[in-house]
Image (cartoon, rainbow, N blue to C red; front, side, top):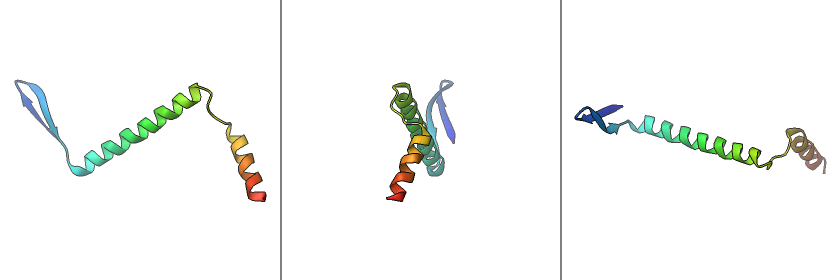
Length: 61
């Protein structure tokens, strides 16, 4: 990563393709986690034991 400054202030940051892709993937993952937290705060979730019980029922049919 390279930082180009003008008058001591950062004006441009240049990164490689790989590090940019890693940054994008990290941001996407953080976005998914934030959305999940919002769902939990709003009460839109199902306890894991209930989910697994439903899966067991579906496997048995």
